[in-house]
Length: 315
Ligand SMILES: C[S@@+](CC[C@H](N)C(=O)[O-])C[C@H]1O[C@@H](n2cnc3c(N)ncnc32)[C@H](O)[C@@H]1O
Image (cartoon, rainbow, N blue to C red; front, top):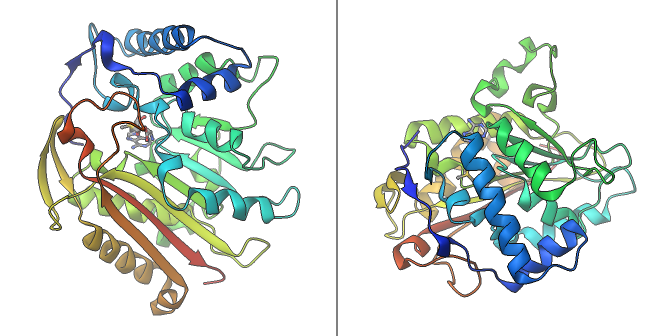
């Protein structure tokens, strides 16, 4: 994993946008002022700092700079289609969606707020993160843990994606012990990974992509599409390679090398026939500093790879 420098926290790390304030008001069902929203978010960041046992700093920019309330999932070109597709499914057969590396789970809560259907048994929206404390802080921030008056329909849990077997090894898996990723092998219709791939070097990014393929559902059934989508640092030069980012050196794919990578791995998993049923979109973009909070440095805004893969089933 690329090492994040531990940078200091600043008072102006957060600029509250209308979108962020509205989301927090709806999530907490309270008519909060912008200042109250700001206080709540600062307290949440502080709680993470304390539970992470760090003195005056936090490693991930997604928390340090409050990117967890910038709604990057919603900025992906396929987002609206994800919701429309899920809403077309018959009641209680909505596609199973998972955010892998969900941090506090804000993107998923926004997805549900934006109309993604949840089934009555609360078994079609999942958030997984390596850090159990992020899941706990998510419930604390949004006041929706299992023991609250209005528990979230989203099932959050902690697990490490690299403990998943590869698709070719899944026959040997028996489901024992606590609930985890192994229980969702082959069951995820829509899989999201935000700011996850760029934590790892080139080889490990390939390994991560193979583990995501283990999770997806490609069976024939009610839902006829499988979607994997995400965003992370990409190369703005058009060539893949190691880039110096404000938080350290990171291996970055270009839009075309990212497409090639996934095409190769999907053919490896499902054979050449997958090519007729596959659509991959990838674009490296500069973020609009006015539409998201706390993007002060221009270099930080550059080089974000937004991508999506759509597979028509059955494969
Ligand atoms: C940079 S944050 C991104 C959070 C959020 N997805 C977003 O887009 O803002 C990366 C997240 O991935 C999680 N993560 C890192 N390694 C992981 C692993 N091996 N398995 C599951 N989650 C992991 C981290 O704990 C962290 O919450």
